[in-house]
Amino acid sequence: MKLAIISHTEHYKRPDGTLVGWGATVSEINHLLAIFDEVYHIAMLYDTEVPASALPYISDKVHFIPIPSVGGKGFLNKLEVIWKSPKIIQIVSKTLRDVDCFQLRTPTGIGVFLIPYLSVFVKQKGWFKYAGNWNQLQPPLGYRLQRWMLKLQRRTVTINGYWEQQPLHHLSFENPCLTDADIVLGRQIRQDKSLERKITFCFVGRLEREKGVETILSAFHSLSADLVSRIGTIHFVGEGEESTYFKQLANEGNLHVLFHGALPRQEVFEIYKQSHAFLLPTTASEGFPKVIAEAMNFGCIPIVSNISAIGHYIKHNDNGFLLNEVTYEALISMLYTMLNLSEENYKRMLESFDTVVEKFTFSHYNSRIKHDILKF
Image (cartoon, rainbow, N blue to C red; front, side, top):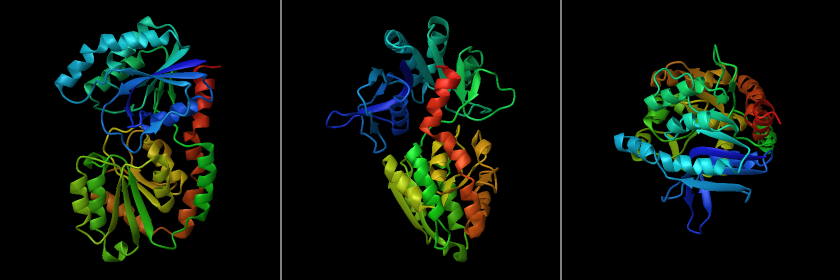
């Protein structure tokens, strides 16, 4: 069976000509070859610097089909999406002739016209993946429009989380990020972890205020000297326009803070292995950030916002700590709890992680596509 994936995933060319794409999506597609004979990925190619997190496809059975790079903030960028829509539809239509089924990844600028096109003019099997916050109260207009169209959709729509009055064709689906080998290694890492030495924290994501970076640094700076003495390193993995500001803010206190920039997947995993707690006090529109599952797999207690689907997997004082209000005062309280956590409770929480992280494996994801969506 052949699958076409339509997305806004960024792709780049390395100096040696190797095609690479955003690591999380490329990893997912590489693993889809376990159930599909070939995958055609219709996505965008950028002529910009290649991020460290970008990955190549592992097989020539993945075919990259470039479409014009469109989208972004501002009226002119929105207008460009409409202007280039006939060309994009033409490429999609031509590619669909060579496949058995499709997946459209939303929300995205091109989703505004591709959802109705695929719904009305395409008869093949297919499904829509909504990766954002399905229950967002005030989404941007484009997101709101796409969500409305997907609610009227007859085809399957996969969403983050479990919601009241969820239509039958809306399937709660975890976005994969872990291999079966990662699960085995993670269990061993968790068994070996303890709080006997200083406690290490980590953050992985875009370095911006909306993701909680400023809140994290402000909270740590407000801790007493006694609590600071129990802290090892605070790791920040990621990039952002305000990186310089955050580094200056980090230097204002007596903390050991390391900014790593963007890192390849395995190097991010090494940060998780060194850390005891994962921080994401975000106010951004999230579905369920895969970094939470990754960090948990390698023994990090999540200290995270209770927004969107996060609270559907993280239970306060059971397998993590939830922030119902994202303020630095609330985060201080959670940091105090973490820094005073007993070895017994730490181990108890780590032992509960399997039921969450196993849902985020590529093998589980593939099985659900095969049996719950395409039924083959």
